[in-house]
Length: 563
Ligand code: NOJ
Image (cartoon, rainbow, N blue to C red; front, side):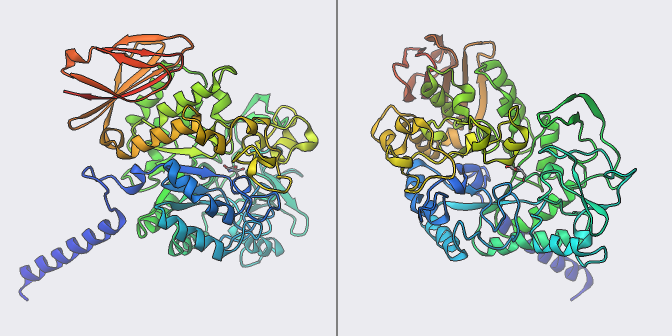
């Protein structure tokens, strides 16, 4: 072949093979080029607390499989299961002793395969929780690492000599006390930003990186559709171990508060994330980030400069709005809409108090739960629900120290009661133990299971659950809600948060009354050429007459506008 022709052929080959790779990595589900996860509704579930098939008081994988029909009918496309790998359960699974297996407490790999297969039949994908920052101290890598200073895996964790008779520097653990523990046998300290039983992996060691990438490959081959990446902010630390700046005040554990300048959010994290993403792209998988960012600039870093890191870094800034304030929500929504990637919304999870009582006023909690659903399930972005949110489950923290399960609550009591309150068993019906198990559950079932449970709420068209089902159904079928732009309305309104979602000739109006008083708003639709306003979802007596929408206290009104 003559020179230039050979050059062209080579160019075409490279061009087509790169097309093939990116087509494999990204299969759009709509004309906008959106990926499956941009149209999906995710549901986080805490396996200990979801459904107990073998009645030992702790939930399991078979229990989850038995509830897939419920999730399908609710409108869930992907479930994220918090860690279900073998673990001593010091941090309830966030201390993994084998990344490629299932803890017998939850079942077997065969149960997991069955869950994936049954999920597939119903169009529900499985997302696992990848604890990337640390393993358990019972993981074989750490056992070897600790065995001697020259062990094969010594450098898989972070070992340092002490200083002045104490730890190598002033870093403290997020769960209280120093972030260093002395191993008397080898005379060195190892680093752990969480509990001492959760030693940090040394991501500067290429062997660690490769091993961790391989773990994800192993699960992708088993049919996993992605990972939620745990604690990514803390993946790297300053190799020179500079002390963190400290503040005068003390935290709930009695430690002086510090700015974790030298052991969180280091730039090296992004290299690791790009590597994880490359592997994910081979399987059309999604990465969700546990990304506690201070602002949108920090969030943007997690999407990656070329959108080549985490597709779904969770926008926890949204959870910082702790009162029903249209102005505050508007600010956060506008900010994340201006981010460099697709927004990911959460209002509750296994580490923060449930949204039901964070926003509830004690009197109108059900109405407010619907209001919050009406908000975050109609925004431009992907929502991640938390189990029980859809039935109005309430945070029920322990009242006595001796009942606390979460070690964070045991060390932080009484200032920090831990996270048991948001992890109580799913409330399936009003029978004993809320239908979760016939045995005594690992955490007590809240009293409210009598009034807030799946069985009863399915029968009640005005329940929180019925509302979630309606909104999710609409969201899956309405182009404007799936793909539309977010257009804020009446930006000075202190009482009602309203916006349009608009896609080509389809427009949806969302109006949310964030007050306990009735509100009437003239949206002047006709002035803007909209002749009909057809209510799609309205709570209670909320309705439209002409251009005027009347919203009952904490009312939701969602309508299709047509020209
Ligand atoms: C974040 C998890 O969400 C939390 O539950 C856990 O305790 C820490 N990471 C440590 O893995």
